[in-house]
Image 1 (spheres, rainbow, N blue to C red):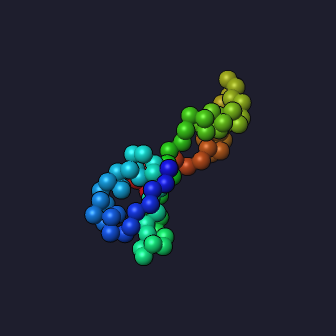
Image 2: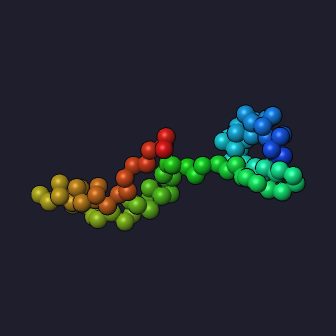
Length: 88
């Protein structure tokens, strides 16, 4: 969903604009002199979804109960993406 506000309206209601962006994932276009000058958009989530995890899990090499288990486990963990920092 996208909202349109003047820069003045956005500055007067900045906390509300940020809350709507964060909690409702709304985009706000800011107008100055009737022309769009900026856009406030939600940050893309820095977490991995269950579906993404399932897809990664399916692509992991098969692990068996042999003596090579530790090597296979290490190889599998290297093939996963690095954890994403939710604060970045």
